[in-house]
Length: 183
Image 1 (cartoon, one colour):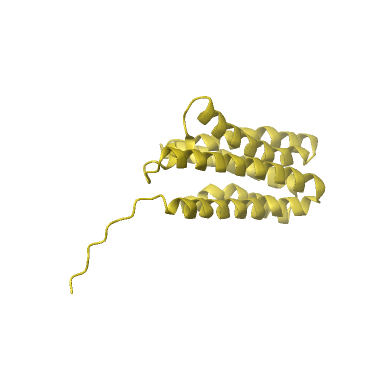
Image 2 (cartoon, helix red, strand yellow):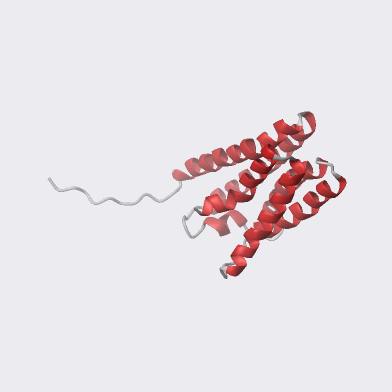
């Protein structure tokens, strides 16, 4: 259920785009992102930083898209968010000596520092790749192709990369000892 709520703004964006247009979809994305933050606040749950970042970027770039009636701003937002995530991972690690990926996952797994660093770098590289790929699709293909890529392509790539990350980490996870069966 939590995953559905995370992707609800994207789902609503896609539906509004298909039935209305990019400007209605952008407005819906802004409203749903605000409601997502409000929901956390009402339930007295901490609001994840990524929700704030996403909300402010969609408010700025989505607002510009609607105000100027130009989808270019919205297309840039996706690349900027990916760039921001990559920048945050790299700066936190190499400037502040803090590994964001490790902070998120260390409660659920123990890994050697070298592996945490590789995972952090892999995700930063992935975000840079996605930002560049979004830029390419956004400005070399029509709007319909970009929206489909944004909703399905980037989401699919993220799921595939996450599964690949888990598979790569599996060999580094401590194996649970199973009691030997007695004959």
